[in-house]
Length: 411
Ligand code: ASP
Ligand code: MG
Image (cartoon, rainbow, N blue to C red; front, side, top):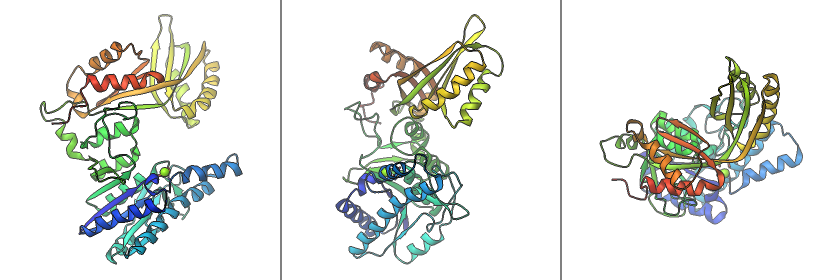
């Protein structure tokens, strides 16, 4: 019998009817001859509500207590799911992350899974149970509860699928797959049948909704991940290794797989510092210490022996980053700093791009033809990202979708 891991997101579990709908889907999967492990998120907006409660009580809630609090959201949905399945005559058991053998490091709020001991899950499957695991949580060596960061249930599900050697991990949400672009920005965006892990990692890090860590685990352990809707029976998108390879066979298809957008971008420039060794280190070390993660970095050397240093951060980190930069700018005798909070990233992603020239040129031309100004550019082997004004991000997405003919089906 094959083991299938299914993950259901908060919107798929938002009320009793939706929980019963999910239970029916689980039953169908079991009836097709599979052993089923279900990983659940917290119902609806529960996690946000719990965060709100904590912040009403304390300005800076204790990290350990916060994780225990947040973990309860997933416990609620996992027990209710077990009750629903039992009510439909199935054997089912709920397990907390700890009971399911999910061990993590000690970084509260963004713990990493250190290992999975699958014995309890396997024993319950052996007894004929549907096993329902609370997502987003684990336990340290000292048995303290941790959470894995927002959207962490995806990670739980893929990690369990890897740990059990499951046939596949299915991730159910309220959209029916991964699209060539955000359908809210590009109405004629097309749903992809398949996408490679590397491509999905770029899409996930740059806007499409999947926890990037879950994709990394899927890639490393070669677990195919199906992303589909819990509200329809439409096919969904399969993220798997084969899709990376298909992309590289001859001229088969357009090598841009999709367009990712991200509006959570702020930019800081430190102006006119001396162009000498150690400047970058003396700026980015204190930023790292302040736990600000820096993304795109551009350094421009002027004629007069000074340099401007520009970089982007998440908007939530802007104030913290500015505090650090202010101090450093003074120490380095900089001419000052400027910042902007209204930028967005738009990226083209596709594994085939790396060995064919001309993609960057086509991208820049498409943006130029719509008079969209490019603020910064950054690339990886399979991605080209332009920073543009936030209010041009929809225009940019549509222009690129057209330029790379993404409305046409893969062949
Ligand atoms: N409930 C958590 C969140 O909202 C984890 C998850 O949904 O995956 O971030
Ligand atoms: Mg959620």
